[in-house]
Amino acid sequence: MMRRFAAWVTLFALLPCTVYADWQHREAAVMGTRIAVEAWHDDAAVAGAAIDAVMAEMHRVDALMSHYKPESQLSRVNREAAAGPVPVAPELAALIARALEFSELTGGAFDISYASVGYLYEYREHRRPTEAEIEAALPAVDWRSIEVDRQASTVRFLRPGMRIDLGGIAKGYAVDRGIAILRAHGVAHGTVTAGGDSGILGDRRGRPWVVGIRHPDDPDRVIARIPLEDAAISTSGDYERYFEEGGVRYHHILNPRTGRSAAGVRSATVIGPDATLTDGLSTSLFVLGVERGLALVNAREDVDAVIVRDDGRVFYSKGLEPPRDE
Image (cartoon, rainbow, N blue to C red; front, side, top):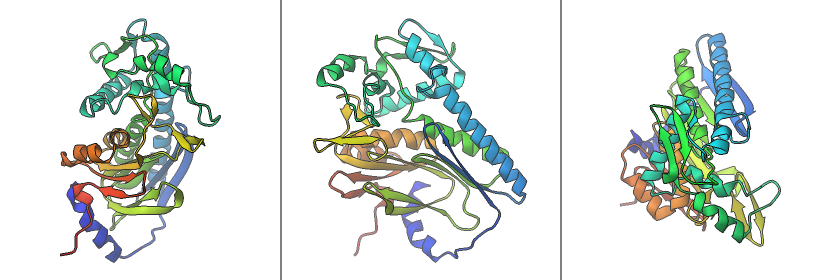
């Protein structure tokens, strides 16, 4: 599926651009980001009801998995799991287990326990931890010390001071839930977006959806346009939550090994079959860097990637490489 994209870049410009009047669109602020849903159905009321259901699901996932909400199950895990197993909903246990699979796949570049250091950063207030604070908290960053019992549906931490944050995977999961809800309502054409993660359902009624990858320094510019059908796309960038101090950009994508903002990449975009996968991999590629990140992607048949290095150079996985002149 993924290896068709490069050819589509040439084809989509030749397709007629038709405006349809029956598209339903809605936006809201949920999960600390912009949620947008667009859907088409012969019956506008059906599309509207489907979007209502998607928005309700976004709020439900947020209530379950937000580390900002003290009453969420994830917050309870962070408070109590170092003392013993904490019962959680099966879907939360499953998503944490999925996150650990990403950690295994990426050699720890993806690690939800980065939050053991990450909570010390306050980007709105331009506050970062001292070197001593990072060194003191860093031993708790260890995905291997997160124990998930899928049968009992419990989560336990094997190290004191450990915290987890599902920000690198939960939005993708919520997008996948939204796409499933649209499909269950009989919607065959639509999109669900949560921040940098988008799910694409079907095509745009006769032509592919065209998703732009923004320039890291200018939200009004794009570095690439990718036509997609029945796919997901996620971008992790250093421009969403950050502050600069002394010529250094402190952003929210931390390298789990150092407890500091990952360096060398400005943005990483992954295209694949589902948003949980693309969300986790885009975060991973940002930390891994160009060479290791593309090696990971090129070893798979189900994903492609675009990475912008810190010098502005753009790199593509094999399935997206522009054709070379003969």
